Amino acid sequence: DVKVTQSSRYLVKRTGEKVFLECVQDMDHENMFWYRQDPGLGLRLIYFSYDVKMKEKGDIPEGYSVSREKKERFSLILESASTNQTSMYLCASASGSGSGLNEKLFFGSGTQLSVL
Amino acid sequence: GQNIDQPTEMTATEGAIVQINCTYQTSGFNGLFWYQQHAGEAPTFLSYNVLDGLEEKGRFSSFLSRSKGYSYLLLKELQMKDSASYLCAVLDSNYQLIWGAGTKLIIKP
Image (cartoon, rainbow over all chains, first blue to last red; front, side):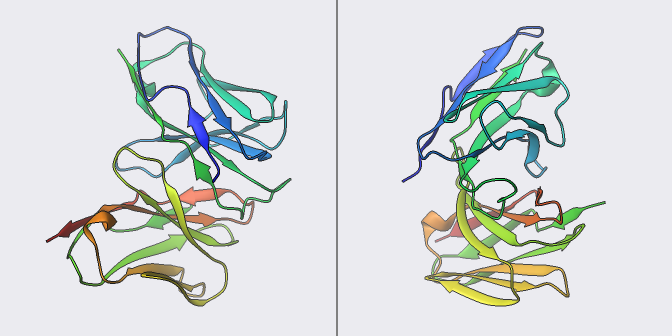
């Protein structure tokens, strides 16, 4: 089975801190994604990546950056955390190349981030 | 704008059948997904429909009507473990996934 592992299940940070959320997948998937999930809203795409060192902005990239130095690892960075970034962050991966986004997503268990 | 609508919450009885509806208005269509998400856990894939009709997978079935912008997920012989949120998502013409807010399904004994 595909495993997508997020480094932390819960994180509490202070406003202005730099925050790193790590995600690792073990199935050699090309495509990786970062979403945030907030109550009453659908998943919102922050960034995605189709290949190593490649990144594309999603719907809500402001305040975030990403890094994909290795195929299996996709990191989400909050340069200066703010209270409105308190949320559940979900990492996902999918096989395929290019725009093969009709492939199903495999999700990590999520990181609940609280910014105080 | 693009929009996915699904009921916020539904309640059903163990052993019964429940239908969770999803309507969508998107820029193009390249398929519709259903995912299941138990509280505090990762969403997991249930089904993918790109052609009209019903696809059955054990106790779960998914239906699509592209002309009506409508899908439903049908769960039969409900079990307590089916208590979860069910997420509908549509792939638009740019192969971007548009997500509904999810339907929380509560199963009562």
